[in-house]
Image 1 (cartoon, rainbow, N blue to C red):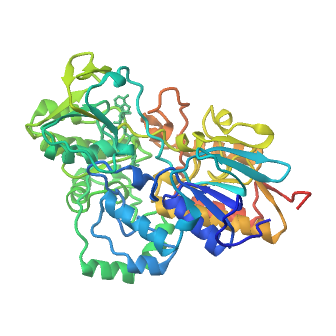
Image 2 (cartoon, helix red, strand yellow):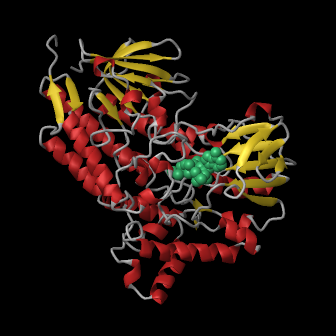
Image 3 (cartoon, rainbow, N blue to C red):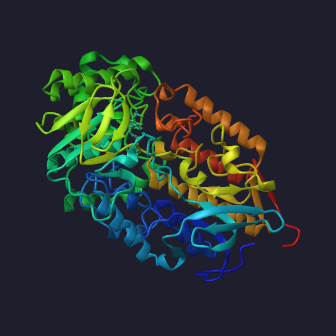
Length: 546
Ligand code: NA7
């Protein structure tokens, strides 16, 4: 039973939270200040911010609009904070998270520069024992993973990296002081959201930039702009309604989602819609605001895909380069859709070269640069924009052991299994914020995080109110949920792409569609129903000694 309250200096806590990004900060606040639990958060970075702490690469910015990519739990917070633009850059988002940590006095309960290495459930006490790389050994009734979906950097195992005489960086672990590209020959590997954001910015200062592309991407212009005081006054006056609309939506965004099919309108009307969204709105509104069946109907999807392909052909002056940049062979939106500022335009610069790795893959890194099956490229700097071991990588870095010493790594070898994306059978009192099997990365993340944290808080309160000490997803509920997650994904086009949603970017990772594609609002309702039915699908119990 949670008994203590407020800041705790000992080694026994009601809850341990791993991570101090968007999820960890809110979990700490909610469990400590709303529920009155003793909480210790551990964070590997030497500052708060999570993914926004590590991803400092040039051009890093949010792809969701600032006024909704933020916390909604405190009206004071959302009224006092003003974002500079529609898509703020990483330093501004990090300032926001630092502000949250200060404003809610979270820092005394966060231990920075500390990586959790082990978490072991003790059935004799219904508590977790947690160890860190700094030698801490603490116990907690609840072990809350807020490690993030995109935090374990993926450095591809390319032979010869150690021999490289220049400097190399992964975008997800960027040096705090930045990198000076002036006068340098830079090679950038990867053309996901990150590579697409970084390319124009690096090209602007590097002597030469070579972009190594394995798979071309469907990118839509962000159409970023500075937000005016009038726009802000309007947003702040309507925040309640904006948040409500987001919570009741499919993707966690307050946009009107079209129910129309792309192939049921005339080609002229469709073209006009795409053109308006491309030219005036940009960003995710292109996918959310156009047609409702882009992710479920191949013919509909092809209309949007072809529109984007033609835009690329129009923007990129060299037709051969344009054809290499044109995505084919997978539907639009089935890899995480990037949004950009002048990405395709950058390939018109004299100091930018595109290398098609699908024709000639990288074979090794050599002292002077990079070798493909076709040529050698001399480089001073290599930037790996090669993504993450998404959704499971960060949690599995921790040696998590549940009932009977069962290892989470072993349990998830064939792909992650959860109930509601929140709990894993055999791992009682462990909660995973935005875990695999929840909408998470397919939605507006801060909103998904708030929903999970509040649900977890309610569950813990329920246990306390009923004199219970242990909550654990049943194997049956987990199996049924895993099947449901799979069934919902299989009627969409998502499985048709080699995406990180499926783990396809990590050699050897089991191919399983990890996020829940059934939509944020229906998912939230399901979670609420489970709670209202006395945590249906969970086994709740009281420890004999408590
Ligand atoms: P992504 O979206 O996983 O993109 C990684 C890119 O790196 C992608 O183009 C990959 O090609 C490429 N890649 C990965 N490994 C290799 C190797 N071995 N050789 C060549 N190219 C490689 O990561 P991002 O950081 O861009 O974005 C992650 C998320 O962060 C993003 O979706 C947003 O949610 C925020 P591939 O497509 O696999 O052929």
